[in-house]
Image 1 (cartoon, rainbow, N blue to C red):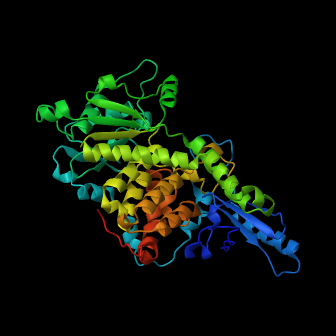
Image 2 (cartoon, rainbow, N blue to C red):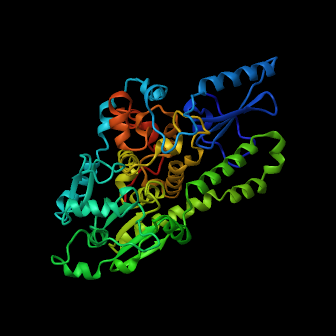
Length: 490
């Protein structure tokens, strides 16, 4: 648990939070020695770089070498064979190496932590059960499972049969059919899905058209509400660029042909894929790491650092993410229009946009309990691939092309909102930093595996690990704003 070194130069006072930093061993990506040899550099999976400088010791070289070997030994985890195809999973001995299965600190909120974020409770809070046009289906019982990477409970139109929904799911990549994730106070709904399987032949699906029609009309069929059927609007936000979506047609996928969907507008958000985001974050991390090294200090002071920041395009990517989320929020709130968000498979950019939209529109998600519910619902339950994106328990070279800072980028965008509207949030940046640490630390069970099915059925995290939210609730005061202005939801 190293102390962070003092900044080399800064125009701003360093917050007290950074006086002492802890870096969980699970967060270590790589480490190296100097120059100078008295310094060790630790690169973390969240793209921080920490510098440890040893002073007041006669033999700096020996001490530095010893500490380097110790940290390497402590952080070493055996690698899954690099030739292993497909998504990663944790089983047997590799599973037991993760500290989450050994961590047993007593937490007063231990039981509440796992029960805090039931997705069905969120649907109750949103008033979904008061609306007869929507129903909640159990998605956990084969052979009636609609999608194995989706939550156990799905909110879908009440006027569609299960057979129709099953056919609609087959028209979407990985069966990730359009499903409701949020119902706004005005009745408009936010849904999420994967891309349609249109292909070069421009395939269509009557069931998919019917499902999107219900999202547009708030679940009301045409014969019950002809006015809503005629005048309501649906916006499909494809998180990708138009060229990327078109290229997917060559492999049997693509995007919607809006001529088949009445009163529907398709908007491309031009957000790049996980590979571009990984390269951007690495460029940003390199700029920050180089700034720590004395031989580059002159080069990166002042404009040099900001040039490299601009070249990394990290802030540009975050801006596009916020613009897409703001557009969706405006359509839901001001036009009472339905919104469907998707990217390629619907678990990276889709999760980012849907989460930020709900933070913008619903004060509940700007509270501690609300953020917990949001992360559990739109990230854990809807199948964000924490295992593949973070590489828990495997060597950094294994399936490296699957790594990407998608969740960290969401926290970055959330921080930008918190920074601009501090009075609108109950929690502070300390909670975001805590989550950025522990999405990689393997200390809690919430962020293990690639889906709820893997977490609860295969890994059995609820009975074997602690929930991150139990810890947050036990230490609530550390994560909430205590300085004016106090939290004022609006």
